[in-house]
Length: 264
Image (cartoon, rainbow, N blue to C red; front, side, top):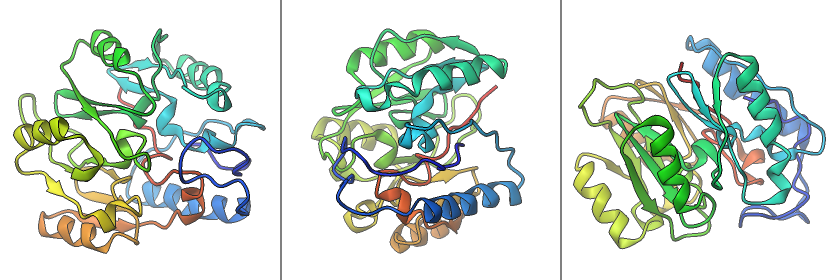
């Protein structure tokens, strides 16, 4: 995670960002701290990367890489406004014992790559390019399932799909939740076939970034603005943990955007 000490919205690279709309950095820090403390209270180990002045989106650490087995596939951002984050994230991984795989292709880390059981779900359409799907599959020697996003509000995979069982036995399917309308018809067919028991989330809950959530397999950290999704989670035996990141949503990010999973 990265404390949003320099958070503001001074440019627009997604539909949520409106530079003319005031932001409150202190409020963003308080809300972020609530998420951080909730992770720690439930027994999770949280590592911090130092925020860098001039990089207001660095708080969205999910975009900073994708890790499995001690290897970190580093990011290569589409927009120049975020390109300055590439060095700090790569340096952090190297300093903390990860083998860094330097990308040739445009990718935005766990924004578009989610580990679901033994397969990597990979989003494209707005940020990460399709060639990065081949590259990430080669780096980790895993099957990659490509999914195409079609609604610009959901520009990263992690805004429209959440993996609820991060760790499953080999060969077992993970449980996921997703917003059908965020994907093209072919991707909806793939998701329905591969994950028949998935939670399909309503447009209303998706529109408030309800799916930009984080799960440890039992607790699901989720926006309080998505009560329908929370009810669906309870029905499946999960425990929703409501966390309000309304200020950070002004930059187009939520709970998962602020959380990069580190897999040794």
